[in-house]
Length: 129
Image 1 (cartoon, rainbow, N blue to C red):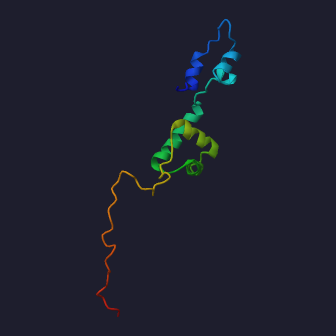
Image 2: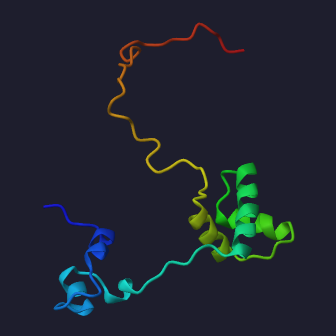
Image 3: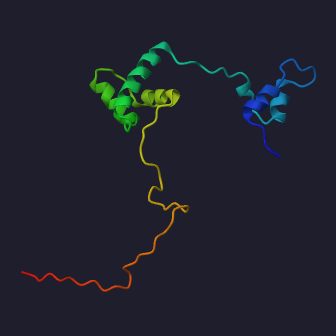
């Protein structure tokens, strides 16, 4: 049986249930009670300007991570720390482009060609000076 996601379980909770309290409902659905009261914040107006600056740097240098982008912004006169840049990059869906792990691992779907010079003795016709 497939387990319902937390979002689906949150939709089931009824705050005006006549017999089950919120505490009991959260226990039955295996949800922390604090998540019932959580309201997500939006992005601040000040952060939107900084996010646009981060995006401008990232568009020029898409391989820069949050550390290099922070240095670039500080060099441009925008005082910001790396944690704020990292948070805004995550919220804005900005990510450095770089090779991932196992790039040298062979793809099993690709054909393997035999080495044809395996048993041949290779001699040079050049003489040393």
